[in-house]
Amino acid sequence: MTVSLKPVSDVKIGVIGLGRTGRKILERMRVRPSWDVDAICYDCDLEVMGVSNPWFGCECLGVGMLHGLGCGGQVELGQSVAFGSEETIRAWLAGKSVVLMLLGAGGGFSGGFAPEVADWAREMGIPVLCVACMPFSFEGISRIDSARRAIDVLRDSSLAVVTVELDDMLLWAGDESWAQPVIELAIDWMQEAASSVLSLILEEGLFAFDLTTLRQVFDLGFSKTLFITGEGEGEKAVDDAIQQIMGFADFRLPDSEVIVDRMLVSLRGGASLGVADVNRINQTISKRFRKPARSFFGATIEEKESKVTIGVFLSIGLGGGEQASASTPDAAGAGEPESGVAPGARMRASKPVSGEKGDAQGYFDVLIRESNRGVFEDTEPNLVNGEDLDVPTFLRRGIRIKT
Image (cartoon, rainbow, N blue to C red; front, side, top):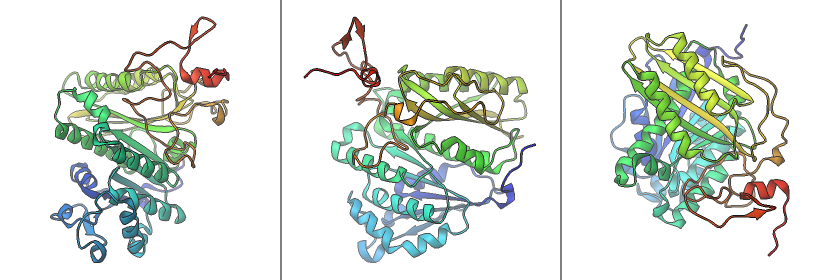
């Protein structure tokens, strides 16, 4: 018998969209009228606010300081706006069970504002899950560094930070794609991640899922968090959705060093979705990610839904293939005990730019990889006793490099 610590009717979800990106995500999210969701968009730029949406509010902050203009990429100004609005933000956070924060990293407002909100929520005992969009690599090192610093600070106060890389989206859509369609694809990706979480928590689906389970999935201090999604419709809906997930995973997770510590599969489908389909989805995805030590599965059936949508959250550790041998049942719930590999034995994807906070929840680079050699470019082999070793293996084995 599964006992939820908090009945679904008492769960109060807060959703914050920051800036232009946050507003676009909110506008596209699929939210049912029966869901108890309080959503708001914050910015300091009056132009971004526009007309209020029926399901979420809009508020322009720092008008007296910035006169309705943006922060111009200055994180310090975004932080000042947050400090000046602390009483307002805390009042909005009060009573929330969990908060989803949606933002585009790299800007001054979101970079300074989001970490402060996450800090206040943590002080109030409210878990925060962030979904953030990282800039294109061609936008310049200054903007990329600003985005990374913001994520490094933000993840210290958050349950998890799921990053969506625009460079990933560019590879997914094709190198000849224009920037705007790629940005739109990323926004769709982000709204699907947020909608998946809301659906799992607020819908009484095929498998029990609550806030306690959400903490079990994400509250892992030495992992990264990724989100992969697929969608299908018609007779081959399940096959198409699985194919999309496998295709994106194959190029985003090409390295054998990748270890999936925990996995959450969110499934939404119509009445025609059978038990055999659900089992096949779970088995296929679990096999692809090599049976994580802890696996969770949530599914909801929507009578009027004609599509099958699969979302997969992955808690990732980079540790040289030393994955736990513990098996995980294909059904919902916790599997065998956690891997015995110590957190310190797992290799990091990359060091935080600030160099201060460790690697609690982070981001992945597809085009710029410091720890995985040979993904997108040819390099000289690293030969040790006839073996061509990559950098994580060098570090794991403690091999000294003569300079």
